[in-house]
Image (cartoon, rainbow, N blue to C red; front, side, top):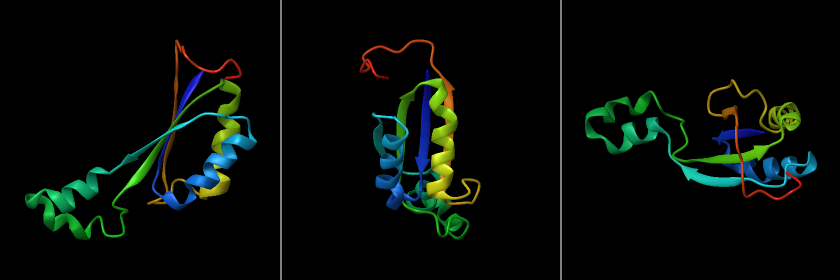
Length: 111
């Protein structure tokens, strides 16, 4: 089992990402509204307000998508995300990573 974590800066792609999950058999995810450090520093901490130009173009908010997946779903999920989002290494796209899970309880049997 893996925990797939997607920090999605292109929030307009959220629905497409969730549909992609369903197409490859990932049937559950939790979505959390979030704000990046750059936005907080440049907008809300006066001493760093001068850094605003460094973070220009940064979205004020993003979404964190969490999903517990079977190990064999990892590669199809990453491939699907790259298909929908484009090159994830491009600034402003997002971040995706997985973590191994030792124990998971409370999930539907199909997961």
